[in-house]
Length: 296
Image (tube, one colour):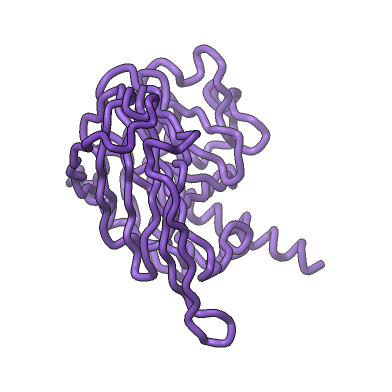
């Protein structure tokens, strides 16, 4: 009986959001449209021809609530289909009056309309990389978002202080938005154990040009590379070498310093070119970790 009441409350709340939160769309229609026929059972869009692949706004807008976990990671919940997913904040992010907004203007409980190609990647949470436009239609509160706390609890785990951070790089090509996990190397790290005592760990090994394996970013042309570290990274140092120096394991080769631009709360390597090895040294309060990759 308890589960039945929870489900009923969920449906009633979803109905309220559909009628009042995103009223400019067709979310309250009971009759499926031709576009809806392309949806999978979980509410995501299939990647079939004629179903949103041709233009940026080809699919019907998704009315979604913003959810945020204790680590600051942002998620969305489709208040119509119930799909739980992640999505990038596009450049075209406005309020209902068309005024431009920043990513920092989004808070837990807000309702947004998300426009894009309609292709939801099959993962959990889902991933919607093809977002072209987003509209903040109603500001909300953490209390509004609390009804979905069960979803956040499923994906969030308290970080282990002894665990080293990781870093990935995200970039866009003509075909897709790609994210890759970077190789890691030397580090120095300090943390407090369960007894409150400070522990120190370190690895001082080979130079990046002597690493046997490196993650690779396949670029068709120069592209912006967005660094996505875990935890609260304070600063970053970046150096690059020609790939030929890595192939020759020439650790004496001189590297070139690379400045990272700060955009929307993250560091971006602007117009990265194919043919280079990149060493990324991330600095946290607890210490530093080296990461590496090459472009081709």
